[in-house]
Picture 1 (cartoon, rainbow, N blue to C red):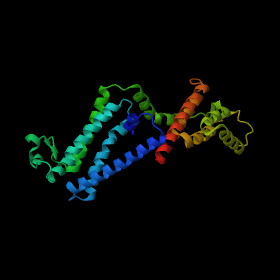
Picture 2 (cartoon, rainbow, N blue to C red):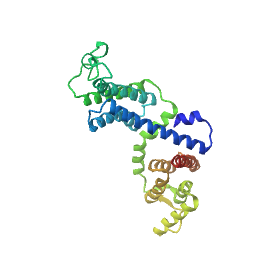
Picture 3 (cartoon, rainbow, N blue to C red):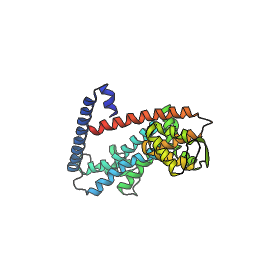
Picture 4 (cartoon, rainbow, N blue to C red):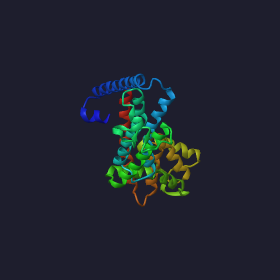
Length: 290
């Protein structure tokens, strides 16, 4: 998809949707043909469960980068890509190459003596380790190399601005959740101002109707009062249905920090997020219609 957008340049929506549709069809056909060819030419003698376990090890290569993205702010794209690339290379060498050898596509002596008679590179006994079964051997070596390179390359290289912003957003999500859990009983923001923020996503009329209905259920005659935890929870539920829980927490946290971030800046933040949301909805709609 990114390459298609980069190479195609500006296009009419209908033309882009047609190209995307044929691209998907071509990729589906290629995956099906490749899987069938691999089964018939390489692993026809194996059970389906064994083939699935090899595939699971390949998918597990995403784990170090995923965990690092959530809990480690120093990780970057170069470290993740290096770890993934080496992890998949070792996975292929330790789990796929032995099957190619057994199928007769590669020299049999690689299993006992290694390529070029270099025994440390034997696919089933990498670095001379012979104590584990083939699946455990491949999984441990590939994931260990993946994780070490992800950490090492991330420490040795620098993040760009976008990576720092994304890392901060992911890693501090838990901290924001704990911060909102400690909301004061009465906040400095008025309910009416809270409704203004929510209205940028739900629409002014819809938001006014919902806030008035909520105030009537609480026997309140006006919204010009300080918001308590119940009002904040209500606003968070309304925002979560539109922009998701994480974004809703960000918006409400910014609104509560009235001293550090004026309400006008909060409204601007919401307007920008709303524009991004509308763009994403339009892209999703075009993708589904294709």
